[in-house]
Length: 131
Image: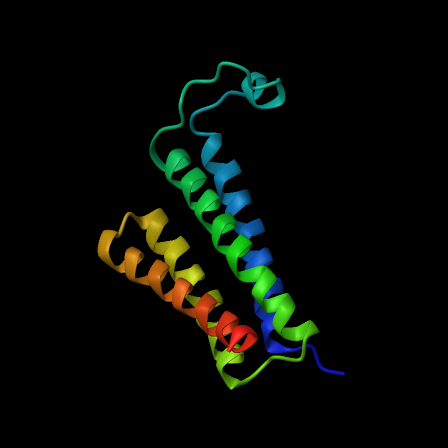
């Protein structure tokens, strides 16, 4: 049996989160020394620059997954998947990738449009569950 596209996109969104976490760790090296990174990390100064941006990017994507994942899982488990949920899941994933890249590059308006597209994709997955 082939995995539903909604679950494939959810899995890819988790992989994308992992990629962003690795990027965040890489950028942390520009601001933190080894002793700070392997220690308890108490009283660290606030993140700056790309490290701060990467941290916010990871946090933002986690929030997106928290909203998207339950709807994708519910749609599949209740057999509520439709063409709309399939397209919505793809819109969610690809817009989140675009958002992450645009966020790291510091592109303001397009980043916000990509974020909004992710929300639209999430609603497209949720809609057939309830209506």
